[in-house]
Amino acid sequence: MSQPDPTHGPSPNPLDGADSLCVLGVRELNALFARRQLSPVEVAQAALARARHIDAHFNAFALIDEEGALRAARESERRWLRGLPLSAVDGVPTTLKEIVQIAGLPVRYGSHAVGAAPCAADAPSVQRLRGAGAVFLGITTTPEFGWKALTDSPLRGITRNPWNPALTPGGSSGGAAVAAACGAGVLHLGTDGGGSIRIPASFTGIAGLKPSYGKVAASPPSAFGTVAHIGPMARRADDLAAMLDAMAGRDLRDWTQGPQPGPAAALREAVLRGARIGFWTQPPVGRVDPEVAACVQAAVRRIVEAGAFVEMVELPGGDDLLEIFHRHWFSGAANRLASLDAATRAACDPGLLDIAAAGAAFSAPQLVEAQVRRAEFGAAMDALLERFDFLVSPAVAITAFEAGRECPRDSDAGRWTEWAGFSFPVNLSQQPACSVPCGFNAAGLPIGLQIVGARGADGNVLAAAREFEKLGA
Image (cartoon, rainbow, N blue to C red; front, top):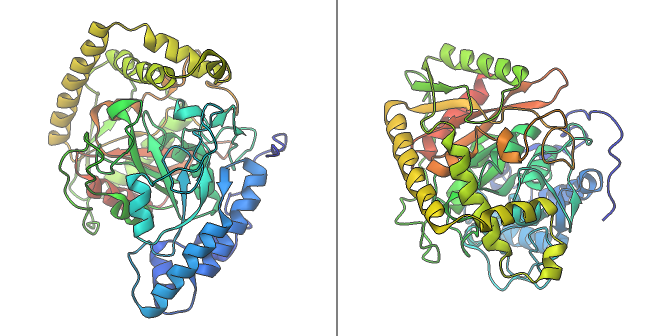
């Protein structure tokens, strides 16, 4: 795959130049399909053309499956013509991250360590989307095994931000975020083990939800354990809700999931009026960019004007949270690489090798201690979200920075986790958390607002995100 030229300056809005069919959401597509004014085949063709175009510029796709997408679109067209769509996402262009199994396609996790043989079966999330009639355009890029909050890998190269291709889109669901921002599909499957949906959503100006843990089943289990979630990414909250409804539910292959309620009901209106909201402004590690802080404060003022009651809060757990997360995440990396021989490991991302070595050095008592401390933090977060309807914060403390780097050049951070302090704590505690665009910095780069709700209250979080979208900048 040829690499894009990163030397030119900031791009215009990533949707500029997109076919008008590429900017429609689920509701608009449903209405046009039902009235026979538009065919899923036409929409798929436009989305595929857009995917090829943006891939040449930003390297967002590991694979574009034109034949499979058009076959699925023709099947969807026949259902809509009979008035028998399978779901709201029937015929809707969708991408899948290169970290979930997809029957008949090679999924390589951005790594030379994984062969190119096609997968034998769909992961539960993919199976549910396929059963709902979603049209799969292809597979989006990820860093190797999804280990970091950037998107570059030894196998796929560097994925770039459409607002400025010299910058990263974040990660690990960076390819999905770029595809969403540019209109190469409506719905995008992401995964989030420490911010991997919310960080790229913030960096590229889209919406992304990390659902409550277990809302979407995972199989095979993540090497990183129960901090890893599967969720939707899109340009608007309504589309997140439609995708979550299609993916959510119990699957017996995921033992960690536990009994789950069905998909979220239709989103409530006016959830912000009268809501009790905790405003979380300081992450457990790292500093907040002043422009990010100012933008999020302005967003919170709009929420207050909508009728919410806002109170400043501090997160329970304090400085210990980074160490707790590192013990979970780094030992997960060690687990993921443990079966590789020396030659294969040598071809892996050096940063991944570093954290795997750190993870392998933890003792059994240290790992159990991290689990106990995590449980204490999770209980404290549940209690906090009994007191408040929502927490709000910056989605990320910073904006997008130079592609190909783990940390900004002028930062004192040593690892990506040190600038992701608003995201990884919520992976430890497993609440639903959504990043929604709230403005731009002086350089024209997007900034995201994070909305967190109680475990199981995914519908409320999405309703709050949708209402915030309507408030405008």
